[in-house]
Length: 362
Image 1 (cartoon, one colour):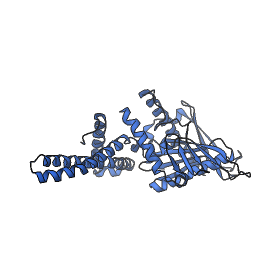
Image 2 (cartoon, helix red, strand yellow):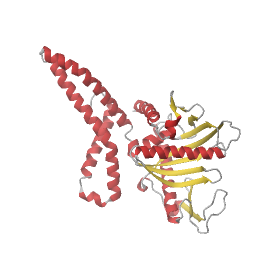
Image 3 (cartoon, helix red, strand yellow):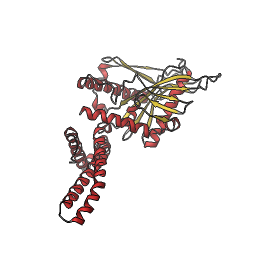
Image 4 (cartoon, helix red, strand yellow):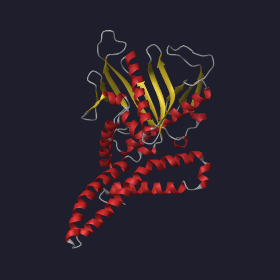
């Protein structure tokens, strides 16, 4: 076990390393291959824990090397002691970096437990331009997913046919690190630019809101579908509310205990729309439970997982200046990079901020 870390963090690390060892043993069991869902979950979870195990192993190795060098310094051999002192400087710096990496990995460990997330982008204030901005923002996340090797599955996209924007879009994103990164995006995103629909060249301000929900496995949220959920099947509707086909394929679910209503009509298949609606309902119910538990643990902290209520503005994109300003950070970032899905620097700074906050709460 690496030393030089807070006791609470060491306890958390020990639990994660034990889980990694257990999963490694489980995955060697041939019987597991018969349960595809469980096997996939175990593989994804172990993959998420691999960086933590590797960081801890490196820290332990450097600690042993440091101990050996300190013994050489005390050996009484002047020449050997001088060489050891020089190496101690290097090893000390590497050890400090390794311990910082362990700390960062452990603090973000629960984030990596989430294998799939539901990402919702909705047009806000600004009329047609808000719909265009929502479409652009969705494109940023699709490019980010491509860079990170995540899989993106569209669940429901409500298009603004007249201008090419979107009223709302719901997609599922699966991959290691998806929750950790995308949860940083929750909130209101404001853009200041000259809209394509503006003939006078005036700068407008428009907004789009982003919600990010961990997608639970069905076993994580228990629903009595027959008793608690009322289902309506209707024909799909176009942008103006008119029916666009004669076959009843759109599915609307009303969860009576919570009042949540989900409508899906993206697919031409009623069964596909039903499955997608159920997935989104499960995710929203899971978020309600997470928020309740989070509030009980610490009433003083925000109930939105990852920080920041989703109703607050988190970022402004200023096209004229070519910069992006995040409300949580002092620095500004190149607009071009962000629009291409390159959020590495921005997310790195936000993750450091989150890590400091979580470490203080341990």
